[in-house]
Amino acid sequence: MLSLSPSLDDRDARSNLEKLLKRHISADAFKSAVRKLHQRFQIYAAICPVPLPEPGLIITPEIRTQCEMYLPVAEISAVFDRLYRTSLSYSPIFESCPFHKAQSWANVFVSLPQRFQFSPNPACLLEKLISHPELLVEFLFVSFLPRRFYGGFRRYPQQLEFLGSWMNGRSSRSLRCLDAACGTGESSYDLVLKLLEKGCRPAELRVEGWTIEPLETWSAAHACFPHDPLREADYRREIQAVFTCKASERLLFRSVDLRGSVHDEESSVFDLILCNGLLGGPILNSPRETQDVVARLTRLLAPDGIILIADCFHGGWKRKFPQDWLQLQFESAGLDVCTAGEGFCAFRRVKTAIDGEPCAQQ
Image (cartoon, rainbow, N blue to C red; front, side, top):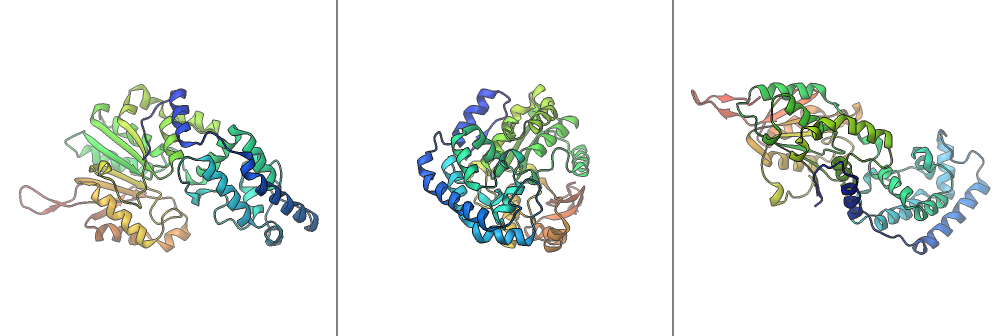
């Protein structure tokens, strides 16, 4: 389990990234695959009419069908999956990669950033990645940190306002918080800044951000995005206050799969849990897995704690997994729910000291 404390020191960032990457990739190991892809592409280019894949191309059914007929994306995907496994020191999670469920190589090509669109021939991309380690690192981050997964800072402002109101009703400012499925950490830093704004002292806080992808864990901890320097600069400006007051020392990022068993060292309870952009969407939408994650989050919740759940999924996912259904899963796990910001809040009811009647902790 990867566990990283935030640091803006370039030496720390390089040292921790080296733990996630393998030192050497043998070009010889890919010679046969490169040769075969070159042959496939030559046949495709000779037989199919223009246009071949190019930046900005609108992929029509005809283009997709022709490309798939002569240049099957399954073969290309298998080679690049091998490149991912050869490049990373851990087992990759392929769901975020551009090849995952792609309809054709043409669809993959137009989805790539422009610097990777120098040739419509996938063999040329493969050769260049193998021979240029820095470009390969960028490609890994493009593949496992796709821009479509992230919404930036303050994505759920109403939820943060609800959190502020909840904090006003607490007698203690000491908090242990979990940002479940934190991605690249924007919401974790947002949470720290909000708690500081509400009067919490850094020493009173313990905030953990959990995500399944180790490269996300690394980016969150070091505010580094090798594939996107503009994003990195903006990100560092946003979080500077957290480091200035040393609240960063109370923050920890971990690679944890919420779909698996929670280990003993992770099983301490949290007063506040955020779980945004995970349940009922493209990442986790199996009813069984959703119920399992809800049960695990409930076990991680302190007796007087709350779980805040929100998402920005499009209407298709909301029709398949409406909020009422998600709320029912938390109620089935023994929690009550109420509206909270852009989503809802799950909590345990406790008895009052006077009359024993239920009282919502909000």
